[in-house]
Image (cartoon, rainbow, N blue to C red):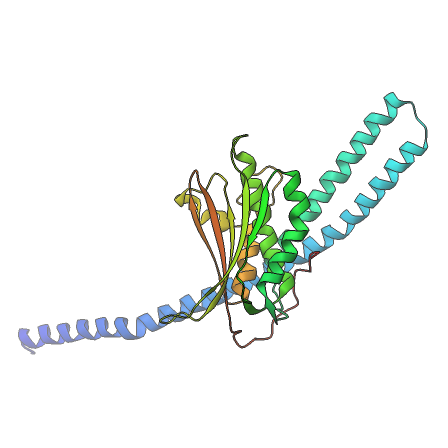
Length: 295
């Protein structure tokens, strides 16, 4: 009969072999199962995203028809020469229908921009020109909101390879967000929106960057909320889609850049778009989900 020492040694050897097997083989199997689950989940999410985008497109198209027919209905009510007591409530209801339908369509367009993929059409652009065009475009709206809109531009060109239409869209989202934030300012408080362009020289492992600041004198954003506001559908503004800031960040990141925020409660915020001065190799991507804005 085998001795007790031999049995104990065999048992310990078997236990050690089991531990080694689990540590090496078992963990590999577990990682393989985990990778398979993640692959299935990613495929499911991609399929769900495609279905959602397709559904949004299908909803957006008839909304345009509803808005057009609401406008025709409004004209029909006016042409019918109804008594004012009857015509005014009808026109008010038709206007409300058109307004809310337009808002839903805008929300869907924001969603499609956020959920889609971008194909960048990069060209070297002087960011001073991009900012100047946006200032001219938004100046009437800022004056109507009693916001002083000004630019702070360097004497020398700040050139970066960008898709100008997409960068304008990101900047416009930030500028509108800043103007809306300043609506909460006290009546006697200064409301100012500053667009600043500058070069950030290369240092250490950081390449040279072009930087655009969107600075406001609004109420500021508490540290606990500074990352939250970039999540989809997070908004405190009634009627807002909650996608303006996430879309802006996506556009900047597609350029290989960063959108960062420096804010102090009671003093205002500084959103910074940082874009590499040299374009990375462009991989083929799907069709852009966004379009140009007026310059």
